[in-house]
Image (cartoon, rainbow, N blue to C red; front, side, top):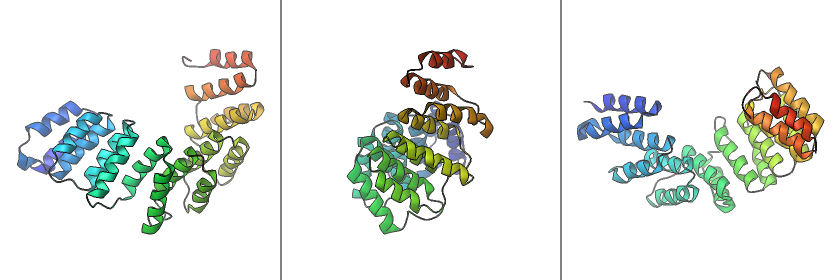
Length: 271
């Protein structure tokens, strides 16, 4: 078989989560039917389904590792929750002379956010500015990862600075900033930012309402929380289990236990 045929099959099986089938194709194809894309597809496929050991096993056997290979391995570590390992692999990658790109740096920032590794996160930020990778339209994923990292490390001024400098906001970036404010005890500012987001014409999604309801909970704004919950359907969003959970939490913390219980009993799904 030709590598193009093999790779189409591998991508199909990996996309469907059928990793044993992908592995069978990979193992039974001769060396001439495999190329760098085949190996990268397997590492990435295992990483996306959370099988870090299998991803590592394929990665270690690779003869010719490119930037995509390292990126897939770092992503596999992050998806498996092995954040220190992700940073270790990133250091190995740099030691092998590879310059990180935007995709790798998003994964690294996620690892920094989970570890609270502020200095590593600041290094990424400095690197982005030096390389001119941040601040360009289309790199909103990088900026969102930066905002999230600074928020999770408690550096709200730096998070704001990044957020305000973004040229083309999207809903995920707004969610990261609103959620970061709520998480750090700035519920009032989180709700103000939510209103600014609506005024600017951005359409909130399910995640937006989770972070906004959390902001109401942290500031004890019961009536506002109820209004936000009711407004979900106006935006075409059917409340899910986590939204009911947030509302019950808001009511419970305010001492309205009977109302909180009523919310749980009235849920259209199993609480």
